[in-house]
Length: 361
Image 1 (cartoon, rainbow, N blue to C red):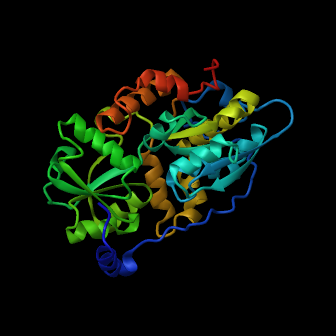
Image 2: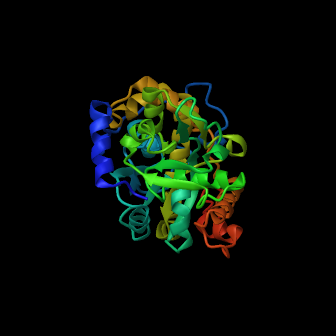
């Protein structure tokens, strides 16, 4: 149920100056070359061909590509880093970043129809529209660990199971974090549709809704999740690296199907460049945070670096492991009635995944 006009006005008054505002526009990134982005010996577990950067360069003329991303989401820090630290250039790409703020369907349609060549998004938001047939293929995971569930300290909610009979504040009814914690609740024996009530609020007002008692728990993603936890001293009940999900990716890269058919080398190059970038982010969170800081007002580089360290930017499966993770998510989304009950998870995962770094899918 969405909040009423009276609810919103009350929350806006309560939030006052404490409400945090993130910029709506994209930062205009500037390209910069570095001699050796992997000079730090702590960079490990990356493909051998990528050790010096540029290991996925497309042969021939430099490709011009458009990559859509959410400039205000810390999950997409790799896109900014790849431009500013020269990862795209070294892989023979000229990449224009497009800050996309529309719906998931609009983003996937933009990729499928060639308005953009690739995009970064959340698996748990993309899988339903991909089930419906968008000509977009997932080529790699980006990282895991950016969705969080909070409650007030001493409020009686210590686990996802404690959400039974409670109201959960969310940013929207199709949010990936809402889907994720609904899945966890279902696995614990709750009926997410009957045992939990959902109310939607703007992200920067979720903390106020929790303090006012309009909801008993809230869920959202970083960077706002981290900011609210620190600002309001919230209790982090769980996140999407808890338990069996410790090594599950949440953010993914999607490519337009026609790019794969017409220029697979370019598809490989943009995928590989982002994997190289993620390894750099993992090894250099402080520098990555400085690059992203312009896009996250109301926080600090130290906070952003702490967020990046809490994510799994060094883990980004792109082979059968990712295909299996997608199939697992598809099966789990059936539990919460997002994916059709007769959908075969493995067949759908096979259809929407493209192994551009190994054997053709």
